[in-house]
Length: 508
Image (cartoon, rainbow, N blue to C red; front, side, top):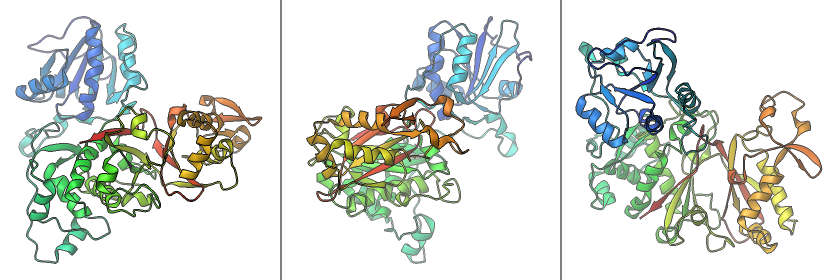
């Protein structure tokens, strides 16, 4: 790869703009390249010289420019001649080239700090903020000039943005279909064989080849038909497709970062939270045993998502899924909010949806951590008990790294509400009263080397480091049965732009 200080290769037929120029190598089928375009547009709008080089054919590049609304010139490098001259190891690849044609700075992949450094090198204010809904960093895709096929020809690019996919394969098997599916497609539990008749009934007349999404981390295509086949295997009823299709879109949302969630050694797996009338329409459990998979709706929706992540996304245990200890939720992890028993607005209304709308929310979650508080009769006492559990999220002495979902049992919610606290009041109390005493940092271990980044607060007269970034790092829902003074804390995987963010999608 061309290095800093070397002379930048010149274009032979299309001269490079004079003056400082940011040259970016791109591929139309690379999600990270597409993530980069809005930031490059910001540079171009401020009169910066930005030039893209796309490693695709002219029709594909035209479509790429249309789809991404690129506002800077993008050239065609179908023969990869310029790519070989610059030799980037992956795309997007950035080369900041000075007026003397020397390379001043390089970067591979998406990195907000580097984007801001490129902007500074061109005399422009920062263009990438820390909390704009996109990750802080994201690896790119292998540069096409390094991927020759037989005969040295470049393979056809994978179309990550097509709207039509191939039909699912039809397989005739001589052996028992349950045993075949058990071995080929499922988790370690038996599945319902996805016969043509069952899959067609599940699709309910929808177009089989319509592409819903591409499933990270291997970006397998999820057509309506393939989603339906996994729904059949999970035991879903056909009506569940109205929830499953938006759920598939949600898990592929860049903010959720399914690639990271599926490949981490951490405990995390997607937790589904269902809100709105669909809870009643399809029979989701939101009362007793809400985490216990006691309803067909919860169990099969959660399992269908997990099968899709395995079968289409490629995240299988001991392969891409490298979780050290795993999580029981990797079979099925789906709950609904007990909106009727909650004294406050439900989660989806808090997030801006209407009460009559149905939604699904995804949270990259650990297993629930139980909180038992049967003695306290005050909001403060109940919330103090929950704060102690929140302090252990991720790792006891690690602060500012994770978020949490607090699932309040009905009796605890009533106690807190009776003392006049709103849901926001409860979140702010938990935020201000969840911390780690400074004396806990005397020994070496996780979190002890980052204390210069932590905020010091006082809790009950003791100096502590504050656990969470903000009150918004803690979300509260009400769920579970009417009897029992129990709640649960559900910790997250890495939070914020570098990790996973909670996402909510409406259901039709």
